[in-house]
Amino acid sequence: MSSADTCSVESINQEAVKKAKQGLPNEKIILRVSESFKVLGEPTRVKILFSLSKQELCVCDLANLLGATHSATSHQLRVLRNMGWVKFKKTGKMAYYSLTDQHIVNLIDMSIKHAEE
Image (cartoon, rainbow, N blue to C red; front, side, top):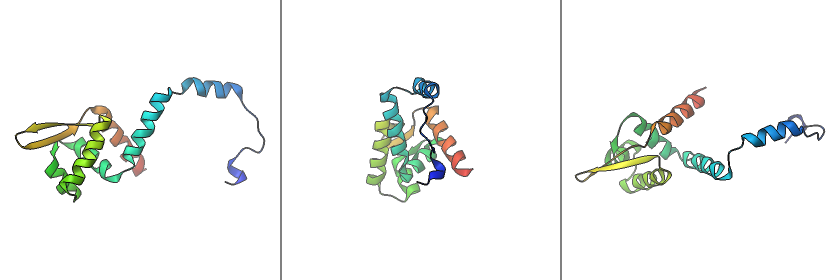
């Protein structure tokens, strides 16, 4: 770290610190947000979420789209299900996945827009 990107003297603005602390979410929320970023750190999961933001897909279609095995795709879907981001419905022998709500669509859309800037 260079000295150009740090303070030259230590001076704490107590009002600024107090205001920043008041806006901090509780520790449980901070941990959930951190876990969300970890989940998004896997490109395969991002591809799944992006694809499901467009339409409901079965595991076979997702595996084909990803060029992955059914087992690998199911593993990634399980992670997303555990986060509460995707849900599935069984129709006969097929399992169709979709996003749980609009928040996930917004998260993916905002992330892609930010990456494109």
